[in-house]
Length: 632
Image (cartoon, rainbow, N blue to C red; front, top):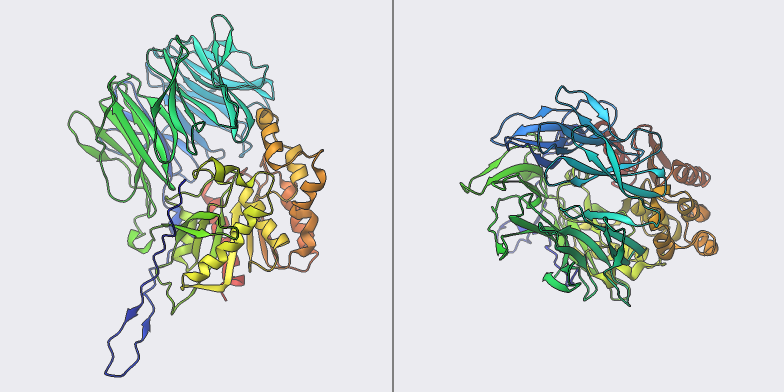
């Protein structure tokens, strides 16, 4: 969220010593070893962490089997053990029970995002705690004594999520909050008296309400006159203060506290970037906050009432993410993720000062030295706006060996491309393609002015940033300006289709991954449980009734006759956000132009592909498409 000029490291040109008067010879850097998509997919993706009550086991999610399941691993080190063994639907670990070794986990059906919450009993039996059709449920936290936990579900009204307390022994439940006003449940105080609710007005303006569960009284605690975002984070362990994030006082989000008794609001923590949130350890000893620092993650931990800064272990090869404390706070589990290293799980012991690595996620057949470190770069767009991006340069790219490139557009609107391991990007870079992960205007992480700069301008200024990225890539000296394509998923897929339709001369190829082609249909077909965000989406993108003409003008489907460069479209059949007709129709329309179109549909996926076999097929076919139409 700050612009400090363009940081570009140009490829070095080796000069071989020649006899007198001989001209220097430009040497092409040696290409790294090439790896297959099967080798990249043999890498394991893992996430999440929850300690068992005796602090000897850690629960996490892993796709080691080819599909995500819940696993445990000894905190002292050892082999992971599968707790669930789904072969059809991705399953994600949620939490150990506080007082025994049962676990909670979540799964949907074929990627439809209608997640249910399940319990794995001590005998291994699985039980759906939120049965029913067409409902979506989420875990919402534990009561401090572990005798109950909280769940949100939209079973009563598909538009809104109610809050229930579940008895941890019998699973009997009690409704704590009946949502009839379109609020979003945020966080519960430890004394179960206060519930923080969030109201979304626009994508850049929101509010927090504090509900007294005993009296039913609700209080608006974030009045403001100019647009600002407010997000509830956590209550303090004494249930006296609410911590929340807000950008009301500047470009970036800071952390403030609201004193429940007095109503006073004070600043708690600031950074030169967005503070994403904060949380307490179970015993209240530590408070952790996370900073989105120029496309990287920075973790801060403070201890005790004085909030003394805690020295965290520093490990090579990446940045710390996803910290979780054991019940006694003696141990801290965390992940380290780097550009050349997927996430690995670690445990730090605060008593001994020792740190132990528990997993080795990268396929042992892949040498990290053959992968590339990303660079944070910036370029100036057509109107002077500075656009931050994440750049991956192939090792053999040089002025003597100019390589093809891809402008990679994130999802959203309002997403962000950050540093970190991506098997798909590293696979393409390993096979000779430079990748520029562009954070076009409208991306999060770079200040609220930059974030709102794309409102009601989709298909225009943000797209033009992507086109300007071509000029930047050409300036590096190691990119062939005639061989630049564009790739993106979700909103990024919309940007790909927009580029192909509205700036058909700009990119040589496009790869659209479940992207919007018709804004009118997408806005009319959003899931019922997005009701609380519906107005915000309409405000930013357009109302499908009032702004129909504008949305037709910015929807690539209605301009598909202009597309004349090779196009690949990839779609999940069960996608609830960008439904399959969005891709079906753009493919049919472009085929009428006698333009090469390749269409891939995964019958068992939704909005994002969670199964290794599908990820491998999508990546391999993307590379084959690029080799055919972009590399020559």
